[in-house]
Image (cartoon, one colour):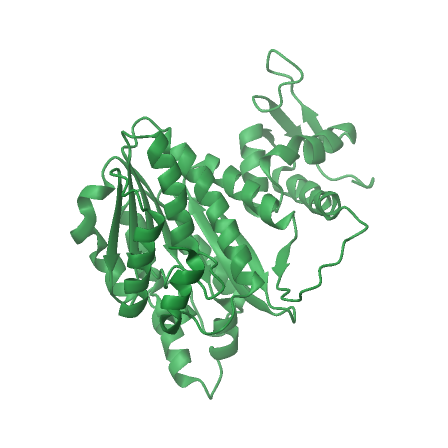
Length: 380
């Protein structure tokens, strides 16, 4: 069955409003990363199972036939499962809306027509918090010898208790992609006409140390970001999406324990957004060509900020490349492949960083150490 026919048959169960470009870009961003992550997981020898867990999966398709994130992931899993027949690929799908789960169940069958044997799909109809709390009791055996990615994409900020996400990360070897709805927070946290929303947000942040309803939405993002850094899951990156009126809408927060994951999420960010500091929604039908290479311009702008921050962070210290790289990956928009050209070499030429040349080759940057001399008056 073609997707147009599928949408027509299930029209009453799908989202009534047209999908926006902001949602399409979110799906592209996450799917591109999942593809890279899935390839790494599939080739990791001790990983026997690859798990993608979508706590709020929706119907899996929009009224214009755009596939949602979980169905894009299913297509990725089909491709990987055919190449890695000794690996098992598990897709966990949950939504509180029974009709939506019925739709995504039928859609999964259409997409996985060949019923590939090393792909499992598990469906649930539960509140997201109950689902997170009960997940291990139901699916514990699938978490052994596995690499997992938890995707939490709530309809509103107050839908999910942040402590439940943390508990899941504490109990499982898993990365996290979390949609932090900052617009819901700043519009309703102190809105006297939105008492229910206010209470839901407060309940969502219960047990998160340091939280106050007086905090700005950016302060809350950083609080959640640090709170969800559990154990070895100590690396993160957050990307902002804004409405067409330039108002903050949501952030996709990524948490991982592996530098490779951080490298890959940055690659996906540059591929989909070309280095833009945030994605500004544009649903207009006319797209104008820019006379400026936006990607190059963004690289230069980000690099100028990063050079200043690197000097501030490591002034007077001797550090290896890995430490500089992790700092830049977490605290800037630059990706790994831009660091040497755009940051290290200019600072070395300016005399603000000394390359120690402790490796066998002067061209070897990644295994070397660097002495950060400090700030100078010269222009970076």
